[in-house]
View: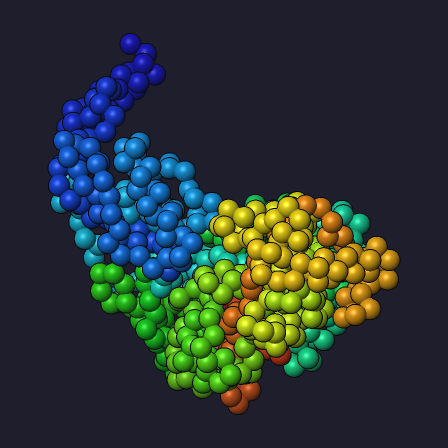
Length: 578
């Protein structure tokens, strides 16, 4: 017998033996389930999803929700996934519900865990032992900034551990829709878009009322093009370039067709970080940063199975802002009391207490941005790109009331001045077809649709003739090529006439969106103490930092900020540990 044949025969005998031991045969696809009620847990958008399944005669006959904290829109997705599981007797590979992808995946995870319990797997599973750990670079937060830092550091040979207090990666980046601002990029050049770093810098400073740290802005701008190429090399699609409010030129890079950038970018970055060798520990909450001789030496964490310590040579804080902590928001800006938020529930500003022992400086904490177009009933943010592609804003009388391409703070104030403190974002089929992100709003049932403007006005309970006159006047300005003389909207910001049925509208109002103040850093993402010195070994990136955006953040600059400074923080940490 040949050596090759001997090996094949041996492998077959081993596999056959294992099949007998574990009760598997070629005709039996899966082990029978034990009858009874079985529970499983998965990671949802806002916390754990806990489900139970009922098994009779070895089959799933029903399921129910025990605990969840998902949005009102996403809640029905859970029951839809349970129904699929009962019908197909499967818990993986199910059809996810559009617009509720994270909730769908969390539900599948919970169903799979419940089936594992029903099969007896949980009775023999060993509970993970809580042990102290060590690494070169410890990254706090698995949002966009943290994942960029982890990818960069791990790809260059560092041992990286990322700790994330939520059960999923992404943080607020999951909800990012508009795109990533960058200038003089390879993508812009391919599309024939003229733009300069200087114009990007000037737009950002102007948008932030010149309260921005000029060095941080200049650094972000100059590294934006190479960061786009870096993200593309990791598998990101940033081939579509649009325009957001406050930008002179088209520079907002996003997936083809104008799809939401966050839902695309997070899985790309998570895969890249893990492939590079970074370890991501979910449901692991940092309770403190350990300090020795003025330097960080690790963190203390609480995990599902207990508390432990992770020792590290350097620490990168990428834990996000505090937009979901209304008490902290009101502390710094009292007029935002009672406002809703677009932030995920984990954005609570924990880091500011951790860095007190290092005497770290905090800057511009009172600079808190509201996003003007958030659906009041459920907190869903409608991307600024809808306005950028031609939509207008009207009040309950059917009138426009401001420049739709004004900065977010101005647009928010204009809306709050209207009756009911909300307004309607209005567009037509042309705009819908120009931006893929709108399809998500359609599937979520957020839009009011009508075959004519008069019919839409009737549905919105506003004067029909007035809405028709408003749209007709806007279309005249659009056709003239001279811009809007009523409110100063530029011709370049009016790409489409609103004249193709059906017509759409969605009620929107301001909500707390981005906390622009935070930990003070320099251009190397090093944390700065109150006396102006660098805190060795401590770095920060993303919304937890302050200074980049000044008094107002331009749409598209958050994703630029987190990716650029996340990568910089990793490079600086690598230099430090060397």
